[in-house]
Length: 404
Image (cartoon, rainbow, N blue to C red; front, side, top):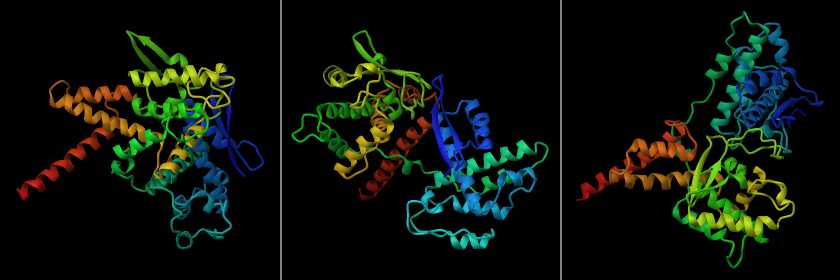
């Protein structure tokens, strides 16, 4: 079975390679990942995602009895029917495509690649992946095959890359479906559930209860990503003019981070002042609960597990899985970031209305606090949602005016 293996270099840099079924590195996908991904500064998570897609590509081509590298070297590039055959397969989950983790054989691959046969055989219900994932898979297939064709035939113009990209699904232009924040009722339920002093705490140990409440408050009050949360260190706290600041630092390939799957700070470094309530929760956790964990002194990371190691992304996800299971709605870390942005929009709207802040200043402040560059598309996404809500309210006002 092909696999993607992560490892840490002596410099602290995280990297990954694609191995064949015998555990040997595949030369061309790995050469591509070094030249086209690592050398231009792509993150380890991006590199792993691309290698996972290339693994799927080779597995699908193997099922279709297509030797990609031999074909490219012989200048027998993929035909339109073959491209369509691969594209049609990208819409399904891996376990069905490769007949894994299921006793039911969902797909049978034809002996000969014919478009009509492919379309007839690969029709499933409720087994499709998202359009965003299909788009990413096809894009990575296209980029890699285009690179491979140019690598072996630098003076030959081919259309395989263009043909693959022409078959990508249209991106969803409606960002509102991707934007999920907590309403007031949900947020009240979450905060009540994680309160460590409630009659029946969600976790058994006091350490877990106080740590997990702090996690929720940090995500909610700072609007940070979970990778940023898990990268905060004790030394990132800074006292200035009677205020406590938390420095969110972009520190890829941190040699002090023993986690193989290193949580990454995707956005810019920044310093954020915290209020008294959050400060008290933070200091209480550090002084009374984190300090009691064996080996806690061996790491500088703020959020740790009960064995004294920095908490992993999987460990954090388990915290929210348990909260979700108890509350019976999906509680995930990124929704706190969305909720923070909703609250920010509401607060600055009052300042803008009173003339104390301009819309441009409000968006620049949002960009800083969230770690974005000025004018970023991410900041614009939240502004666009705010504008859409205003439009909906205006529509309701018009309806009410007719009743008057």
